[in-house]
Image 1 (cartoon, helix red, strand yellow):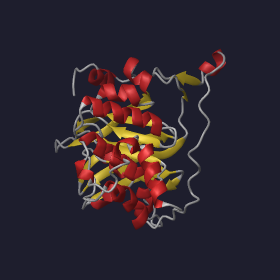
Image 2: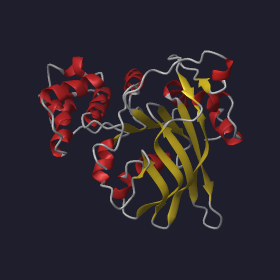
Image 3: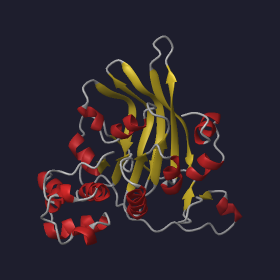
Image 4: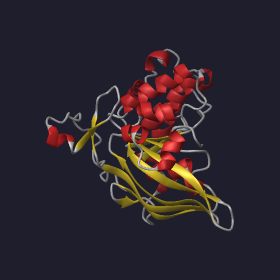
Length: 300
């Protein structure tokens, strides 16, 4: 991938449909933002018939899914259904696990990210990740942000400006601007997670993957992260794994529901995508009974 592969992430705000015919194309998302979304998302990342293996074990089977530009997509489902496995495959983090392999196709702006000519380090710069538990580096707040641009050789006119811009982007600047040289370990859990988000956006990705980013945070810190996701969506595509269905309903434009099915003979449970649609449809009128059962609490 070269720096010219990916188009700009800027786009005009979505306009509300003006008449009945437009309403047949654009479906209103029942969220406070009042955004209108097309039935079919503009693809940034696309999975086509993806299977993911760890050695001989098939952890995920047959996933086909489009992640839309400047949208928040949530992946929900019970434990062990492959949500995080799929998430880690989207920027080749699974490469770091011995025996992991992917079949099918995962593309970023149409380019196969598992192609022989693709640098996985560049993939991870374009498609950043925020993990379940805050994992700041044992460095100062400033150096946590500056580290990525430095090691990737990014050319920046002013590192100070980039640090400030990244911290502002993560809604953290006002809280830390007077202690940038202090250890990141002195921040609260919620602040550390926002620092990790700032560290991710400092290398200027287009996509941010979030693996249960609020699971270790209190309700107030969780609300701050959710508000931040809404702001970040203006400039980034966000894909989030969450066990919190209320969170998915609050923040996501589209939701994918996964479950696991026991393989014949071995009993091994393989994750599969059950349903993917606008979040408002998933939570109000799901097409699959399994989705309805999970959302209503009958299983999971």
